[in-house]
Image (cartoon, rainbow, N blue to C red):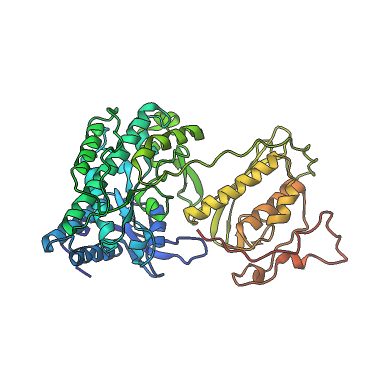
Amino acid sequence: MTSLAGTLWDQVALWRVRAAPDPDAATRPIALPVAWDEQAAEALAALAPGAGPVVFPKLAEAWINRLALRGREVGLLADAAAQDSFAHALRALLLARRGAPGVTIWRNEARGPARFVLNLPAFLDPEGGFDAAAYGQAVALAVRALDIWTGAKAPRLSVGFADLAGLLAGLGLRYGSAEARAVGAAITALTRGAAEAESGRIGAVLGGAREPLALFAPAPPGATVVPGLAEAARAALEAAARSLGLRHQVLVALSAPDAVEQLLGAETGGLAPTPGATRLALDAQGWVTEVPSRTALRIGRAAAETLLAPVPDAEWAGMAQALAPFLHVPPPMPVAPAAPARAAPPLPERAPTQAQRPAGAVWRVSVGGHKVVLRTAEDAEGRLSEVTIALTKESAAYRSLMEAMLQAVSIGLAGGVALDSYIEAYAYTRFGPSGTVDGDPAIRRATSVLDWAFRRLALDYLGRRDLIDPSEEDCAPDATGHAAEHLPLLPMDLPASPAPRQRRRQLKLVG
């Protein structure tokens, strides 16, 4: 590999942390820029092949050099100077967290989508505007990089952007406003124009343009509240129109976020609205806590309360409709709302609990060395109405899956499903992390986070003491069977409620 000396990497100070892409994977040492957080380290652990240490400059330089060398081979980089300029531009884009290629390029995998993501908030300029010129150059660089990666043979590439919601908030625009839709449409038009213009240039260099240019491309918004943005979008589309033809059928597409967006610090994928003004992070003691999101810190607390509030699906759909004419692939749309629920049966009487908590409770424990925070909420009559779990070391995908699962539980509780039913389903489920429980004197071991959580709820809300701790063997990753097979025998009293069904399967959740 080419030496890192004399490149932008010389200016990068690094810090080291241990991180893993998912809770079932062993952590690995990650060296990354000092300004980047542990979420970026988790992303690097997911992007880097193998299981050994990861040094960010070496990992990035590996795929940058591959692209530069391949560019000479396919004829898109004319000489050594063009190679150096191309590699320097990719390093600068990555270090500024403005853009990065997809997982297949990081891992040097032969199969997989040719994808490049641009992080929109990173293009905000200090005066509160949008650096349209730099963004257009980044789009062209992304198209060239993807075409080189595919050997200048693939008719379909995927250049997309992330965190449109964060950009709009940074510009002081409410997501559902007409001004925000105009900005989103102009940025998408700029993306399409810059991508098609670069495709035309590649076709001119290599010959044999495959696709005729659409003579009647959609017109971008005539004006936006961002100075120069509408003009830049129109200029990009006009430059594309001067091409003799396009080298690619598909160029601009938005896709579901993955580790690349996490590495760049993007807080939403594509055009999705923001989930709120806070995110989960670790405090000084290593516990999960809510902290302001990156966007909230950028725009200030007062503005965040208004600009980062959740939006209805109709506003998301309106944004998608505004952007769709400039995309080569239809944009992702919000999931249709569920049908109205039928009237729920009366809630059953709750068994006496050990202690009454009118507003809910918070438990902080560690399960197998992974810190967990369990929160509950209760209705006016003291019945359990909501359950949430916050985790520390787990990947974003794992946390999202756990949040979705607990949200479904909360919806069921509100609709009248008995807590016993959930305890029956989740107690003694087996997946990592598992093992010793620290911080809960009543539960010493658990086969999973869900096992501990629902046995804790059984104790506090139903007074159940029949759910015994699993053995150390039960908590081992390769254990077979389940702890429910070892319930106490006579002369002890049989439990009043049925024990969890004898149907536990070994589960493994990966992020």
